[in-house]
Each structure stands twice: as C-alpha cells, then as structure tokens.
Image (cartoon, rainbow, N blue to C red; front, top):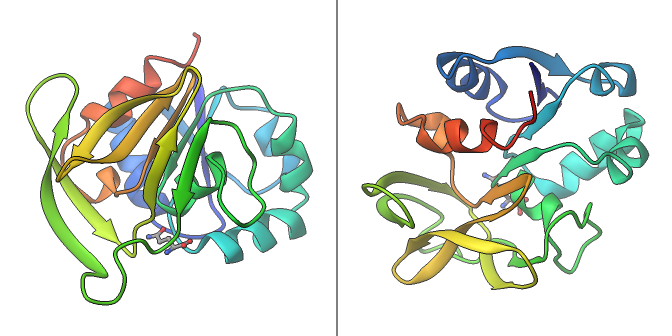
Length: 180
Ligand code: GLN
C-alpha cells in the first residue's frame, strides 16, 4: 500500500515519519503522475490559499477534484477537504471558518477529546474552526466542546497537527480506511 504526502508546503517529513511508524510505504506527491501511483493522500497544513495556487500550478487541482481515494487533511488540508468561503475540493460535508481562533490565541496546545480512547495532544497553528457537519460526516474530536476533527469515510479532516506529536493513533485510524 503506497501512501502519498502532498509535498508542496507544510510538515511533509513529519507526516511521512508518522505514516512510516504505522507501517505504511510513503512517497512524496508533487505531480498528477505521482498521485496516480498512490492509494491514499495526506494533505499537510500550511496556508490554504497558497496551497490552492500551488496545487493549480502543479496540475493537481483538477486531478484531485476527480480523485476518489482516501485523503487525510490537517489544518489547511482540512479546509480544502471541506467547504468554506473560498474554493475547496469539497470532499466532505463539513463547513469551516478560517483562522477561527484569531490573533489572541493563534497557536496553542491543548488536550483534545476523542470519540474513542484517551484524549489526544492537540497542536493548533492558526487553525480553522469546524462550524457544521452534515450527511455521513461524523465528528471524532472536540476541544472545549467545539468540533476539531471529523471523518467521512474514507476521508478525515483535522484542524490540528497530529504529525507534530508522537501520538500516531489518528494517522493509524485514517490508514485503516485505505483499502489494501
Ligand atoms: N490559517 C491557515 C489557513 O487558513 C491554516 C493554518 C495551518 O494549516 N496551520 O489556510
């Protein structure tokens, strides 16, 4: 099973390490040809507007619009999976609000409540907020009662950065949705 990490921006090597720790074979994805060779894609955080431009320039935007394989999107990646005021890939029935925490609390760490198991270390960096989920999209993570993670098989959107912690449970859980 080949898993790709979109390597245009963000914590690419950290995602790679997390996925490899879960036993996945990982490659960087920068072109439509590389996208065609993988079974699941991680879209790291960064800046969603920039990421959209980079995807368009790489010829990956159109490819991803019709791609039906599993995607894990973290932070800016989560924005592109859901819907917001900007154009996104619209893979999940999830509404997001960019930079929801504002300047006062741009970046912070906090324990997150998960639907299963123990709490999770949440690293938030200019994170978006999830304002609504619909259809078969289910919340799986909460901070202070607000949704910060959701699953709509085979996709997972997280507003925080699990790759920056040593906790691999969420990468593992997403990998379990990738057909082998
Ligand atoms: N604030 C960024 C955006 O709106 C996301 C930040 C991140 O990915 N760490 O795209």
